[in-house]
Image (cartoon, rainbow, N blue to C red; front, side, top):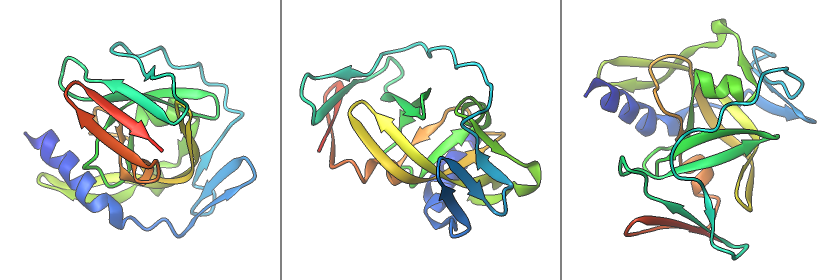
Length: 182
């Protein structure tokens, strides 16, 4: 229950995160005087493919279909500069929220001194780092400059929230599928 309430705090308050100090310079992301950065040259191993349903293209370039997983949620494989992560699609999340492990596998680095309160949950403050993702690709859809937060501890699944979803066009749930269209 505390996990759900903490996640709810991240989702509700995530939209008020100040990202004014974030900038993208060329292919590099710099946050708060270089305390957080996107490092495309990091020599991290590619993450292992996550189990579960895969992203399914419908055959149309402007539609993408996601199947409902056994746990009742929808998951999407996103790409950031050639690195992938599996995120739970959360239409109620204000921003993309990444676990520390997923952020690291995507090449996002942060300094522990940059960690601060990014949300308030039922069990107290949620600690994380606000970031600006230079580009997220989902199937044939790409969105640039996506506000997000990294929650190094306490978030057990990364969330694909409205800071990405609201820029896609239409997201519909019909039975056991979620359809994203332009």
